[in-house]
Amino acid sequence: MLEPPVDLTTRLPGRVTFRRLSADDAAAFAAHVAADLDRLRTHLPWPDVTSTPEGAAEWLRAYDLKEDGRVGVGGMWHDGELLGGALLFHHDTGFATVELGCWVVAAGEGAGVVSAACRVLLAHARSDLKVERVEWHAASANVRSRQLAERLGFRYEGTMRSNYVLRGERLDTDVMSLVGTELDAFVTG
Image 1 (cartoon, one colour):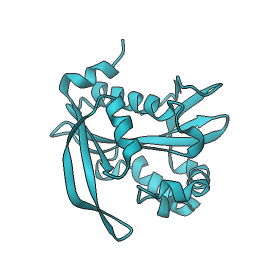
Image 2 (cartoon, rainbow, N blue to C red; image 1 turned 120 degrees about the horizontal axis):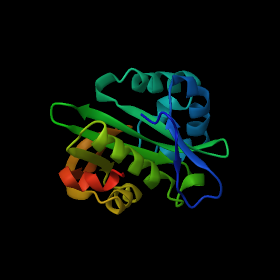
Image 3 (tube, helix red, strand yellow; image 1 turned 30 degrees about the horizontal axis):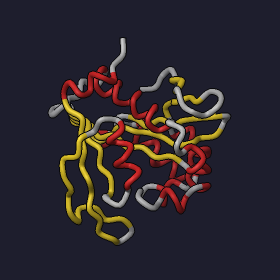
C-alpha cells in the first residue's frame, strides 16, 4: 500500500505526498502527534500512546505486521512536515469489509489534504482489497469527521449509543458507509 508514494492534489502550494508510514517513521510520527496532542486526542484514543517515539513505533509496527485486520497507514507530507494520515483497518476478507480512518493537524486543515488521501485509500480498498463495504466510524461529537465522510459520499447508517469509551467517558458513534458500486467512483483508469 502506497508504494510508491502518491502525489496528492490539494489547495496547499507545492507538493503533498502520501506515503506509507512504518515503525521507521516513529520519531517523526511522535513529534507530529506531540505537536498537536491536545487537539488530536479530542476524538481519538491513540495520540496518548503515540506521542513518544517508543509508543509511535509500537503503534506503527502493528500496521507493519498487519495485526488484527490492519491494512496500512499512510502519512501526508508537505515541505517535510507530516500533516496527518489515513489508514485502513478492521479488514475482513471473508465479508469484504474494511474501515477507513483519518486525522489531520491544524496546519493541514481545510486544504483538501485528508479528502485526497482518503480517495487514494478508497481506490486501494476497492481495486486491491476487493472490498464491498467501507465503514467510517466517528464520535457523534466529531462533526468535522462526519462532514468529510459525507463529502466523500458516505451514507449515514445510524448511531451506536454509548459504544465507545474515550478516557473514561462513554460516547456515541455515528456509522457511515460506502458499498458496492458506490466505491467504483474512486477507481480510475
